[in-house]
Image (cartoon, rainbow, N blue to C red; front, side, top):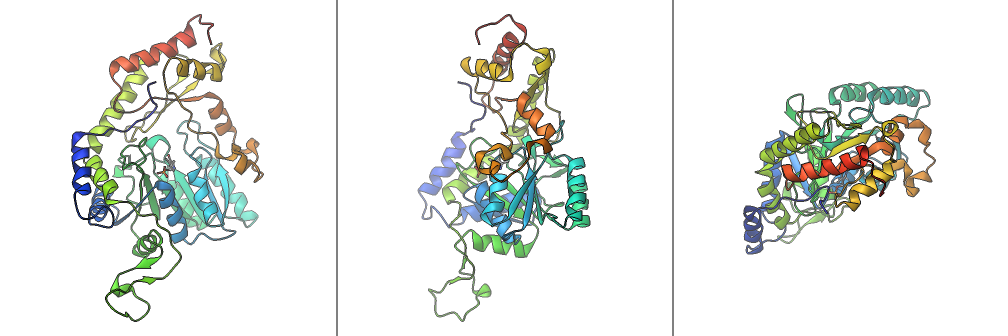
Amino acid sequence: MIPYATQNITKGDIKKVSDVLKSDFLTQGNVVPEFEKKLSQFTGARFAVCTNSATSALHISCLALNIKKDDIVWTSSNSYVASANCALYCGANVDFLDINSKTYNICLKSLKSKLRYAEKIKKLPKLLIVVHFSGSACEMEKIWKLSIKYNFKILEDASHAIGAKYNNEKIGNCRYSDVTVFSFHPVKIITTGEGGAALTNDSSLKKRMTLLRNHGVTKNEKEMINKIDGPWYYEQQILGYNFRMTDIQGALGISQLSRIKSNIAKRKKIATIYNELLSDLPVLRPMFDPDSAFHLYVIRLKTNLIKHTHLEVFNFLRKKGIGVNLHYIPIYKHPFYKSRNIKEINFPNMEQYYREAISFPMHLKLTKKKLTYITNILKIILLGNHCDT
Ligand SMILES: *Cc1c(COP(=O)(O)O)cnc(C)c1O
């Protein structure tokens, strides 16, 4: 099976990781702080706080932004469940936005009208979590202007988008947000096995997130509330968690980050080849954003022009060894969210997208030959007289 995504690990990566395994510190040494420094240099954000996953980073971001019981948080309907769960961990209520049918990011028009209505009924969100779907940035400047008008915070779930650009600057610099989160899961642009990071320019948010990832405990003498009893002394100041990244993971992250430019260039090349190979087929190709990180390659079937259903095409591709996927099941459709009485009728673009979308393999192990194989299989089912579905 050709997977839809997979990690890219070099001998250099393995060397960096084994160096840590042979060193004195597997965790809480100086490798994670070095990775954090590299992330902040890479993005232009003042601070980076590494965690054991993007999910944890989203969680501590919401806590640091003071999301509490009964607050309202909005996010995209087209994301992984983690983008919404983080608000619920803090006791807040979550609501969703429909997507733009070209970018598959949140629809600005529906955001505006939802804000106007929310203002009327006095249910404005305290936080908006935007998701840069597939590594292509949301319209951040416009969203940021709305955040000033309606007084909400912005958290960027950039799990797909490390290395992507917006207005010629790196995603993660937090120019138009309070915090940006990256994921280093193996299917993402770069990996640490499991891992994530929260970036910010705000020193008080950085301080809170650093406490939250480590039990709420500090060893920093300058930050102590009590008088220091002795050299053993540390202090728990808030209720935190163990969301730390290990130095083993940090070493892999540093090594991976050093290759990100060529990694994204290869992904861009793959997207270009797909675009050419699929040009004559009854499919809608993804919008081409040259500044994307090219995390996913999602096509949409023109279902009115083909004789097979979406499910039949999907099953045929899987049967032929192509690990196609679907990003994403609308979050509000999951049984857990369905019980929260969210109406599908409010998400027409997301609903249609879900009936047509297929994520094709997108990773560095794809060759021109494999891409040709993949697109030929799609051709057989879409254009051929194939009845073996
Ligand atoms: C992968 C992903 C997450 C979760 O990342 P983890 O590092 O696995 O916790 C959250 N949001 C989006 C959009 C993702 O793609």
